[in-house]
Image 1: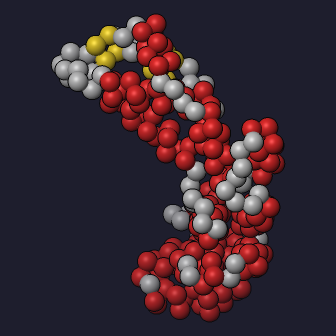
Image 2: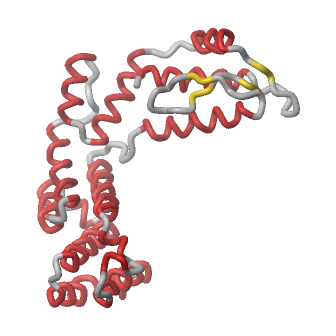
Image 3: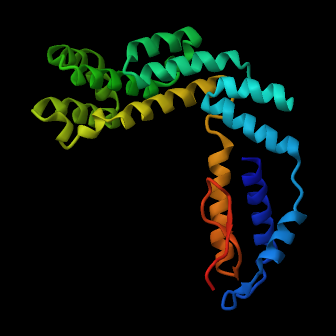
Length: 247
């Protein structure tokens, strides 16, 4: 991972160095020349370590974060014990135990749901989805009427989502219905990610890890440089291996 970010920073630097090239004339850069230019860019190990710790904390890898803290001496910016509580909430949503997740969120910080009506609505919507998934039709209708309908009257966007969810009840083959995607695991993951971000924000921590943004910047830098030069580029981000480009 450290190597990957080292490559990113060096690639971005090289892109800036070559931005003066004419668009109509792409410069050819040999592998030896490219690797020499990459080595000229110096990246502090401390910065790489903080980047890794940021990813581990944000994504909730508490054991890995603790091990990395001991090995690298990099201190996280939040108490690692809070990660366990946050992951318990996330796992509850991913397993369909929405009410348990709501209770755990309130135990952590009641203001999270009090100040985030959209998050609370999505949790209630997920609860309705779980009732429909388990075939509790009467309970689902009652829950939609008592808990969700009033929120739909206050917010047109909520109303549309309620209608899509309740529409699942009109189909015998729910999973293959137009709104069957609501029953996919991806819907649970989406709600769980929203919950995770809200808890992180309440703890004054970034809700998204920096890693994905840096990878997007790497791709952008290479795309910009592609217009100006032929050079060894990274095509597989999982290995960060330099590959020769076709002329």
